[in-house]
Length: 122
Image (tube, rainbow, N blue to C red; front, side, top):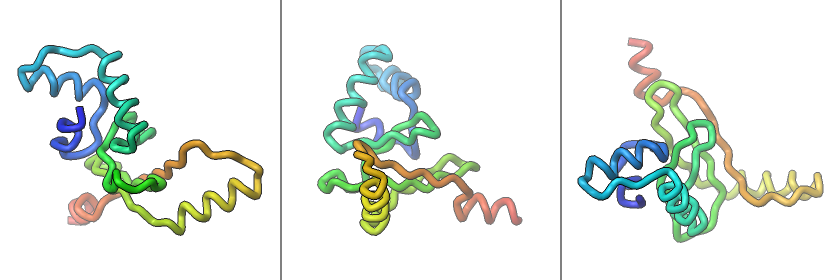
């Protein structure tokens, strides 16, 4: 699954992963197997889920624990992960003020990437 995620050109859903396994000529796998593998990879910090797309991407820096901040293009569905400790600090500060215990922090920003913006302007 991780190899397929790295080979993908952007966020990929569990069902697209199942299809990619089939296209590879491997033995077909069902949804429970794919979701278990994705859950394991997320627990290991190797994969992140983009909730708004219900899709998965490999983590940019799996060796470091960090908050996920994604910029997601509404045109081409490309995503870029940004690692910025200032944002994590702001989220932790806000959670502390509220007495909130965060178990996972993911921020998703929707918009248009430079290429889609330029293509729309042309």
